[in-house]
Length: 379
Image (cartoon, rainbow, N blue to C red):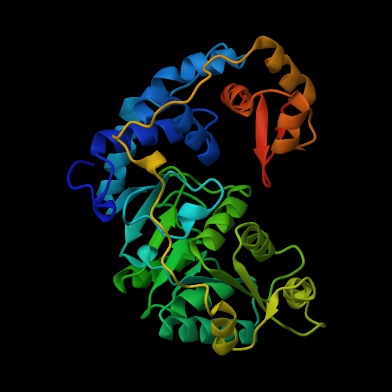
């Protein structure tokens, strides 16, 4: 990342990118833990060197670091399929995604620059969508595309497919639940090829070659909403994954739009319920534009200085919290998630020290983070 100091030109060097990749692929490290480690250690390379010690202090005897050769192999695999790794802080990192809770430090990206657009909106819904639902998804996606929005969706069957198809000429982004080279469902291979040929993009935060599991789809949905200024839900059943996307949108302070459907159709139960809970009822693109008025400007600020490697971030002490404070934190945690702020008040200690203790316990695999800034012990 050498060169001018202009924010818009900053990118990680290849050496730093490898260090970031090793760090996020090491044991028990997710996006929030990654950020905490950079905050605590200063750089990814320093964090890698300190991981065994930190996990030992959390109670783990041995710790698995991602080997250098594995990270180099993953980077080479990306290059072979025409993909790239975009880091938080790079100028081509999606602008709205930077500001969610725990943004992915690295994104696998293939395709054009659609991910850099500030005007992005998600269109999601049922996989077993009706013909009417598919038509509505196409109309919304086409209309929003004509207003300058890139349409974001999950490349699933049904509503997702209809939205991507209608937005091919105006820009669309597909978010994968697996690795960037693992298409699901596989029958959408032609749609993906058309999407990329038209200048769209596909992204993933998962390792190259990762086959998606059930738990990976909610994680994918968090990115769909995080990329966007709002989420349009069409035909979502009461247990639909699209409702997970809407819940993430609420947590991320995104707008939630729902298209009403027949009360006789179970595929509309989730969308109708969202409307009862306060989502904006929409029947046209104009409804969405009216609701979003004033939310699209000014441009979002660039990523924080924390991610400006190789400018070393200043690590903040203390480095070895008090033993009695460790005992209070451990004694306060159980299998039921507790609010982090409540834990800090209960432990009656320095907040910085408590964050370090939790970081060590997480690296040791003894605690688990939950949505809503909650944490629990793994029993």
